Length: 129
Image (cartoon, rainbow, N blue to C red; front, side, top):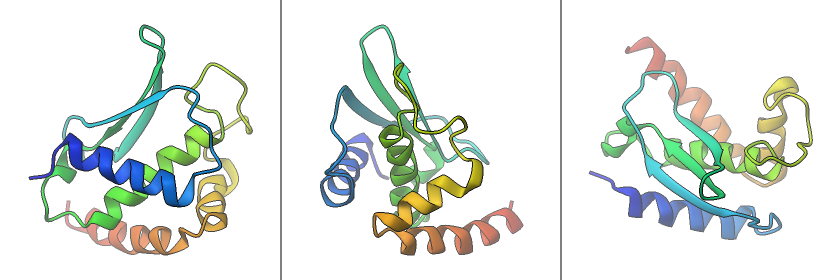
């Protein structure tokens, strides 16, 4: 079983390699949440302690889920962070997913292989629900 330390290591690795240009204005914490069928991750700003919290689907603790899916989910949430969505400040776009901005940003950062892997995997995942 994977744990929150595993997620923190993946977050730090992805941030250092692909998002090093994005300043960490707030402390970013990551953890596994509840097991969900369709929501793989989320990001929110916590006003009480001024941190950003990334929550990853609890199903992904099981090693039967590929690491690439976890990496894609974390990278997806980091794109939201880079574009200003979880924080109280201004965002780059009005809507966080419209027009494929996530996939375009992942491609620009050299992560299109994760997007392709995710799209192929998600088709099978949905069929097997």
